[in-house]
Image 1 (cartoon, rainbow, N blue to C red):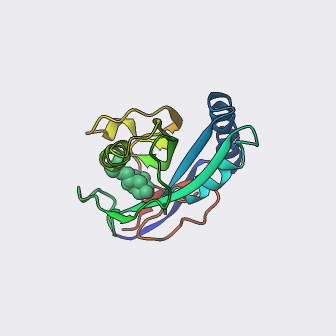
Image 2 (cartoon, protein in one colour):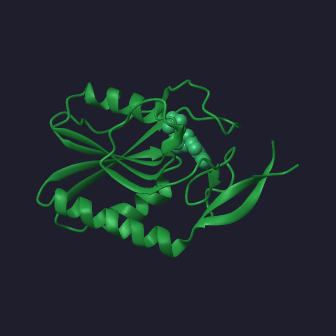
Length: 178
Ligand code: IMP
Ligand code: MG
């Protein structure tokens, strides 16, 4: 299947004001604490870099990166989740926030939170920009959600289709070419 860049679902302005709002909530919740922010590569990279810059100096933040296997060239999960790049930080006894681009079936995030929980962090929370709630098959507890969106395949602001379109500054609907 080929896709083209369709209409904007979330504009740059909407994204930026939501990211500011999430950053402010996290700043209040973790004021004076040490937190490891975990960016799930590659999709969360744009959201993550905007979000952490909203946190400010009152949180003692460390940044780390995790990569798991993704869809490949498909818009549906293969059901296979595997670590491709692990954290370089020991999270034992630390406050951890996983930052992810989108929550779909919940498979990836339930796998990642189980994996990181086994390392006995002081606390573990999840922050997602987008939530396709109606697609959920695995329950995932998310503390910070940006937008709940309908079941459309979206691209841009870090989100890709087969590696393309991550660099677009807004979130667009991917339109199938026929
Ligand atoms: P889940 O494991 O089904 O929750 O899928 C989560 C992962 O699927 C995300 O981290 C994305 O990489 C990918 N994904 C799900 N929906 C979309 C979408 O609409 N656009 C781009 N990637 C998506
Ligand atoms: Mg992803």
